[in-house]
Image (tube, rainbow, N blue to C red; front, side, top):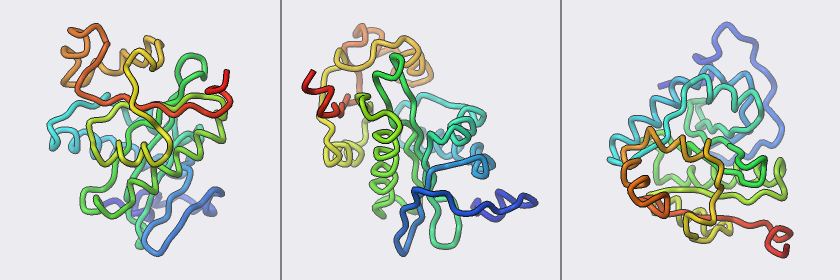
Amino acid sequence: MRTYASAVALQPIASVPSMETSNNAFTVVVATEEHTPFAQHICDEMESSAKARGTGIAKRSPDYVALKMREGKAVIAFDGEGNWAGFCYIETWGHGEYVANSGLIVSPHLRKSGLAKRIKQKVFELSRTKYPEAKIFGLTTALAVMKINSDLGYRPVTYSELTKDEEFWKGCRSCVNFDILTAKNRSNCLCTAMLFVPPKADNE
C-alpha cells in the first residue's frame, strides 16, 4: 500500500495545501507537484478496477495524471494513517465550455465508506471555482456515481447535449465498449450521460 511518506521519500514534505477538507477518517486536498509520485499507482488502480467491473475506461498515462496534479486540476485523498485513498481530476473541452470530472477512483478496501462522495464534492467545487461558467458533465456506468452526481445537481441527458470536442470522444477509443459507441454514431452507449448546467448558462 502506498503511503504519503513512502511516495515522497527523500523529498521535503510541503505544508498541507489550501482548500483542504478533512474529517476523522480522510483528508481530501487539491493535488500538487508533491503528489506526483502517486500517479503510477493511481493509473494501476483505475485499470484494475475497470477490469474487475467488466466495464470500459478511457485510459490515462501516469504522465497525464501527474500533469493534472501540477496544474492544480486534481483532487487526492488520504486515510488517517497517510495511505493513498482516492483520486479524481478535471478535464476541459470545447475551449472551456465543458468540464468533466474524470478518473474517479477509491482504494478497493475503502469503497462504500463515503469517500467517493467526498472526492466528487471536492472536485466539483474545484471545477466550479476554476470554470464557473462551464457545463460539467460525466459518463458513468456506476449507480453510486449517478446518485452522487444527482445530489450535486447533475441531470441525465442525451449524448447530443455533451461536448462535440473530438478530442474527448477520442478518449473513448481505449474503452472496451467503443465499438458500441461508434455503431450507434455516438448517440448512446452503456454509460449514462449526466450534465450540470450553471444557473447563468441555463438562463442564456
